[in-house]
Image (spheres, rainbow, N blue to C red):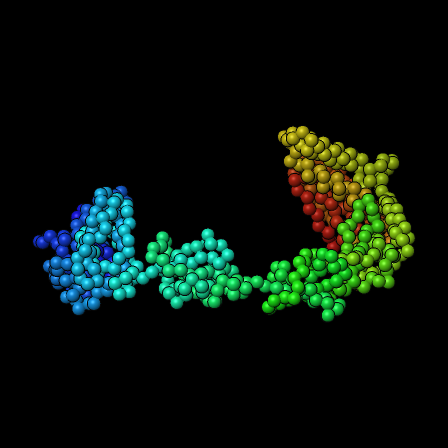
Length: 545
């Protein structure tokens, strides 16, 4: 698709753009200014062919001009266009690069308004900087570079900056540094890339990739400049103010802190920056650092665990343990440990605080043998005729234990061999039943415990009384109505008026069976196994049998 390409005349504040063509007149090669569109700007016009792409199948121009209504004026050159606008066009420092596929000779108008030939350029070659009022001819975009206004008829110079300490470290700038360019003055520049460096400045006529810079400080010469970066330090002894060490060792990380030094054991030094020349220069090596002289000079103590087989880490403290040096102590925060106390020769920066609870002459006197654990003794209930089956009938106890054992076996097969059982869904139920029956067995048969609506004391939970020996308990009995349904048969137990456990055998049935029993009041009747329905109601009817 054919568009017009507008390139602003040299020095114009406008930018290049494209527009639709004028269908009635070919404006290619003309110079134009618009009355309302970019007024006061002058452009050269050429034709370009913008090809469609998959991303932009229908290219459009930057600006669409209504050539029937837009007022414009054509000129023979950029100079004529600019003169018509009464604009004083500057003479600019510029240079050209050959971006075509053949060697070229470009014409230009110099500052006096005369037409001259620019040196012939081979393909890709860049020419020298010259002062130009206008480049003549149509060339690819970016052919010309501009370097600002000329000084008279001369391009402004570049400036080469050279590191005072490294002649190989150089770069150039187009920033005006003429005030400093005498070959002697040294400057410090703004920016992290130039930190802690001094630079001399020399005027040059050519520069590749100039970098803009800002001068922060200037000095008479490199020596004076470099001295600004030399920092010395004064080390003042914390215990003797008159004892001072001067050094040029870089202690910037410790300024304002207190340090200890290699070769000066037992001394602490406050670090401060020293301006000017130092009377002597002693290299130093830092061992440790502290926030204050007090932190450094306060005595510290080492605590070592008496347990040599599995000792806890050593403790260093600034708590005053001078009275315990050589003794063995116990501490408030770890009373089961015994610690040997000794002094340290070099303080650390993060000592702990400790609280001594007891002191002993040695580790043996401090370490007490641990008491032997006392195993609790439980009295298990058994049933006649003497089976060791606590709290229930032998067949029920054996059934629960057998199911629990099989569940544990299945679990071992899973853990040891990765064999997943096909029927282990109820294993957790048998674990719970086993634990419950063992818990139920921990009871003294010499005690009779029963539930009471009022225990008569403020420290017990409502409805429960402490278990106390009672050979002849006095209990209130009520009738209970029990409803139960089982397809396989089962049993349930309750306590009668003598507080003795009674068992009712319930045969298998397709219907609900109903039982009326007489038992102590407010008792809880446990839900039996193998049932499909079970509930009971305490009737407000006293009974005796």
